[in-house]
Image (cartoon, rainbow, N blue to C red; front, side, top):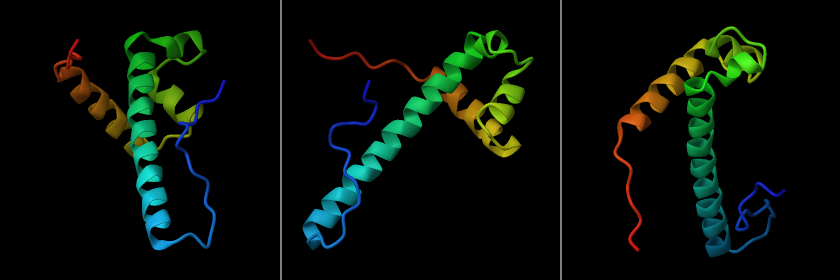
Length: 94
């Protein structure tokens, strides 16, 4: 299963200015999408207490020991996932 978006571009030197600009823009879009996806997964693991099935007594222990998060990053992720849950869902137009 391929988890990288199809427009993922690997670094390749000697590109023109416009090609380099577009590649950077694409890479930043991919980074932002991956960050949002990581917040969704973090929130799901937290909400459904999946960390317990993985052998951890708390989300903090899971995030620190299994994912290598710092205490600060754990706090940021918890806050962001809570904030995202408060946002209304946007419905796609038919």
